[in-house]
Amino acid sequence: MGMGMGMGMTDVLVVGAGPTGLVLACDLARRGAAVRIVDRSPAPPRTSRAKGPNARSLEILDDLGVAEEVLAAGSAPLPMLKYRDRLPVAETDPWADSSPSPDAPYDRGRLIAQWRLEEILRDRLAGYGVRVELGREATGLGEGPGGRHVDVTFAEGRTERARYVVGCDGAHSSVRKLLGIGFEGATAEDQVMVCGDVDLADGALDRTRWHQWFDEDGAVMLCPIPGTRTGWWFQAGPERDGRGRPLAPTTDGFRRLLARHTALPGRALTRAELLSTYRVNVRMADRFRAGRVFLAGDAAHVHAVAGGLGMNTGIQDAFNLGWKLGLVLAGHAGPELLDTYEEERLPVAARTLDLTSERLRATLEAIRRPGGGLDAAITPDTTGLGVGYRWSSLARGLAEAPQAGDGSPDAPDSEGRVARDGDRPAPQSGDRAPDAPCVDAVTGARTRLHRVFAGPRTTVLGFGPGSAAVLLEVAAAYGDAGVRTCRVYAAHEDRATFGPEAAVVDDEGHAAAAYGTKASAGTGTGTGTGTVVIVRPDHHLGLSAPAADARSVRAYLRRLHGGPRSAEGAAEGSADRFSGIGGRHR
Image (cartoon, rainbow, N blue to C red; front, side, top):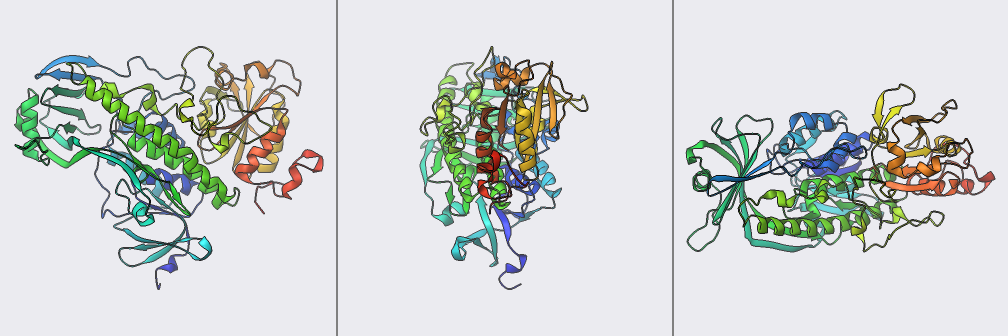
């Protein structure tokens, strides 16, 4: 096989098989891309440090078809029982006031060991015929002639080719180092925590609580690991030597910490493994892309542990990048679509760094008082449901479609928060596309919009009678190019004129309320009434336009899916209608 080129060209080589790399590989594999995923570990790591997906990550895992397994393998977030001087002083359930809503069926995350989540994702990936190649460390990256591919050299001496490479290989990313991309930030040497997975004697502690002991001179936190009978996540302030320097974690050290802060004897801790020291590290890569190589997850950004956003930000990076790579590889979108990955995700990462640092500060402040605890880190922001991209070029730049609100690039925090009450403003381009319960118009089965969006396609929703013609046109031009159409009927609307598109009935009005289309749905059958909404494959709003403005709909779809198969100008000329089907770029 010579230099290992005999493998042929891979579309995407994913380096690193943690949650970020696995989500990306699953998304690409289901799009039919030739994807390979390598990891330098000789065996799948048993790490359990990340405590689980947040609400937004659950929506992504649902789209990938694994949410039910994750829910079954995990547990709901637990109430926190807080102690001072070994006695319980307060109990808090950070999720007590939160509940699922029509636009967000997951209002909270799920506790699950990271290795178990990775196992579920690896199984899903294997279903596409892709397996993680273990014990493979990337040691060299070179651009191929004309910049048309990347040559990746591995520690064993082989070189392999890929059209694109994505470094999902963690905070110490080899890919980032090989690219020479800076990783600016700070490590707080004094903010240190020791962590591990431990077993406690059966019945030693109530497994329906996350126990937190915060004393003047240290802290111990124990959270039960779902799917185990006696396993717990252990986090604590470290033991220190005579000069105040933190000592490395050991099983005996964990036993001493347990005996010192809790009412349990040290011997109640029967086993400790995966011991590690965590230092608060806040860093971000200067850029998330160099040519055909991208960075995602911890390779691109690391932040304070508060709020549990590390793994979740990575999963959401992967979901943003996957569909863009898919459309470019399929020849629909031009390579400039890939520029929007960094444009959208870098400001989110920067804001997450600020958010987690602020939550850490609030938590350190809270635990100085009896009854304070980790609930100080949990805010509506930590669900991930409010993250949007209003500043993105994919949310503006269509002259025919003026966007309300401020789309300036320096205003990522104008993100739409998830409002839960009354008539909220309609979501804007770039915002997360709301969910809504509805009924399948054909089968009568209950479903919801996120089920309609599921799978690797762009979705065009039509509200109101006037949208029917636009949906027909879109279905004819792009039906085989990764675009699906769905007519959303109001409960009172006549459904006699079924087109080829999928159709749902908004029987309780939740979809119209979520998308702000009540007014335009009208009750008549005039063709001027209606709204067309384009939802990107990652569930973010691309465009919402009056049904009469078919030009904006066409222009937006052309950006993501190329022109209809005939000449590029067909949409503008030829009686302003599409001719031909398909969506290949010339």
